[in-house]
Length: 347
Image 1 (cartoon, one colour):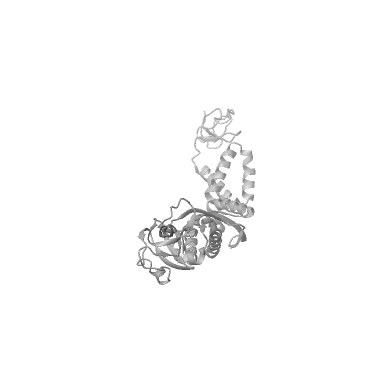
Image 2 (cartoon, rainbow, N blue to C red):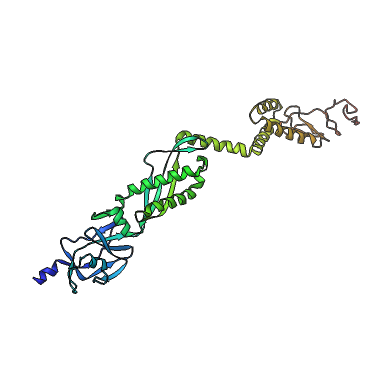
């Protein structure tokens, strides 16, 4: 009879966790009781918690323990230990709480979240990312969240955690008053702020959020187009001078090869939004050209290219040139004895 009685008791209590998402595991009693003097093994990243008649009793951190009345003071006080000898049976539930980090948990907005933006007014955004959490206070977690289930996994709590994180993210972005155009460059700051705010909320349940990441924030298509347009305008606003001067210089170089188009280009450029900058650019280029020494040089009447004095053909287009004054480069009649421009004796 004594042997049968002892066979109905647990002598070794442990949980070999072979899962990746179990948060709480209730040791299966299967109708048996626990024997005083039994060995309890709590592995790293675990906490062993005895519960008697719905009340949390003695708690054990990582290590090996021989269960006696000395290390089960609460169970003893609750009357769970009926006898004081070395092999006294007692009734209690044993829960193992996993305190490791649960990594790469996903979160995302199930529907668009409306926020007020300084540039675009009321806009609706979507966001997604990942987070990590762990049980920081096993007793508080069992009391506030777990209840009496036999098994509790990440999937049992992730919906609740997502709601908290999305709410904190929305509040953080709204309170920051950072424009939509600047959100991408502030994701790291958002991550830290959301983690700090969510940590206080989760601490009420015995949990701790160890990491939070916003991977991306999605805007409506109309807002994305507006952001693209703002980015383009940023180039023109921030670097208008150098940008338009370069374009004008390129156009002027092309027009120099065809003088007939110069007036048209100037008319279009000066008539556009960038007329002032274009006009100043063309003026500066023209002034620089006019201020350069012209002695001994002339311009081809066909293409406008510069020609060295004495040249008989244009080096740009190959047009045959009339006789020119070797002093000032002005065109002269082949029979002239003096230059009509500078008076240089030609013969």
